[in-house]
Figure: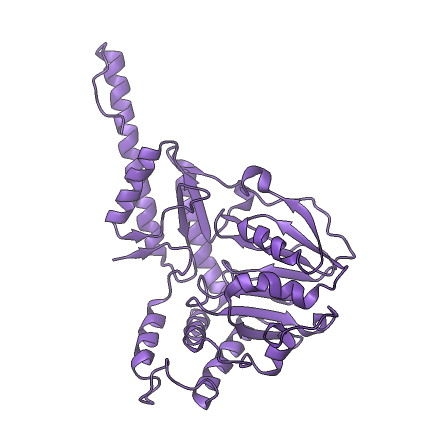
Length: 377
């Protein structure tokens, strides 16, 4: 059995794979593949209608917010957001708490003034800044709710009257929150919502049309709203997989139910890490992510040994990002609790083995008057 801890593209529910694979051969008994149906047919209209409606239900959105499924992934939104919202000469506030926030700041500076209200770069983004002030004259305040690479997460929504813009790519629909408090939400689908190739945007209509600059048609949120996400040929298969994943989440009981499961997975892994001295979580406890758990070991050789054990036990995607090192386990909605249970079992066995070797070396050294050449690892 394979246990998929990849950070994205990542694990999907088995039911989604099965339904999507059937649709590749024959979509709903039509004799056509989902890969070849027309995007302006009633067949696909039913797909995107369900995807939008299920998103609205799961997020409990009010009528002021529109749901879009767009090309480009989350990184496109780094420039599409300021292009649509930030007038020349105006200021947007940004929180620099990870790699993706840093990239978003770079793109926003092309369209207006950017005030970085706080940064955790000084400690390699291993904590979330606190106690910062959001300027009241800012057009919007942008932050990343969960940092996939560094393993930090915002556990509350900032209190401000400034319109909130959030990159929720790696924790979207993983826990309950008041999504209506946001002026704009965006998320690449490939972590908690489906396959790579489509980007969810939830936008409050009244913030649009104020930037005062001409916009390319494809970059204008209002055009996408007017055309129901069908302004041009959409990523049909990616939207279909997203629809199936959203349907699956609804069938599980919705966000409140999946949140309880996610809490169990995260607590089990963090409790295990905290109890075993051989492993070292890198993130401040109060800012730990429930989606992406990051840790290191003191000895690179031990890291290689444990990584090999994980590989032998069918665990993929466990190696940490190159900028952080060590390990990263992504605990997205579709990851079974059983996968985390197996991982923590391997960790305990590995740590006990190392402890026994150390104790034996000390015993022989102290009681036999000599240190036998037992391997340290």
